[in-house]
Length: 251
Image (cartoon, rainbow, N blue to C red; front, side, top):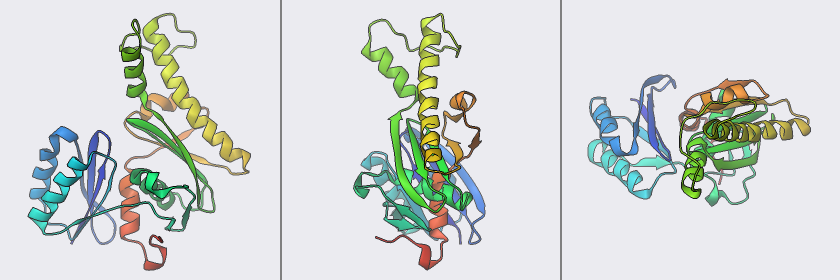
C-alpha cells in the first residue's frame, strides 16, 4: 500500500506517493484555487495507507485536505510539527511553534539526500528561506526574506513611480525595470552567499542546495555553485515516514 505526502505551501500544493521501499510512484502539484485537480488525480489512484503533510497555508485549505482524506480514504492526515530532534538532526530553533513545518521538513529532506555534509538550504518561493545545517547534524537556524515576486510587488505598491514590470539583469542598469530586476535578484543571491560564508567561517565546507520556483532566477548570480533540488519537503516527510523508530522525532 502506498503512502501519500503533501507539501501545502504559501501558493501551491505539491504531492507525491511512494511505495514501501520509498520509491516515488506518482506526483503532482496544484495552485490553491485548483485543488480539485489534485483531488481528481487522487480519486484515480488506489487509496494510500497513510498520509503525511507539512502545511504553512491558511487553515481553511488544510481543512479541505483533511475533509477529503476522511471522506475518501477514512484516514486522518499526519501533519508535521517541528521537533527538537529527528533523523539525527538536532534542531536549535528557539521556539519550535514559530518554525514553519516546511522548513523543518526541507532540512530533514536535505540531510537524507546528502548525509554527513554541511548544507545551506535555500528555497526561493513566495518567501526566500536560507537555512544552515552542520556536517554533524546541527540545524543552526536561518533567514526568511520576501521572495522575488513579493519584493517586486512591494516596490510597485509602495511607491508612486516604480513599475511592476519585467527587466533584465545588468552590471550597471540604465532603465528602471532593469534596476529593479538587478537589485532584487542581487539582494536575494547575496543573502544566500552570506549564509554560505557564515558556515565557512565556522570551519564547515557547505554544499549549497537551491530549491523553489524562483531558483533559476538566482543560480547564475551566486558566488557559490548550487545543487538544484526539487521537493525537499516531500523528501523530508518520506524520510520521516520510513525511518527506523530510533531516528524518529523526539519531543
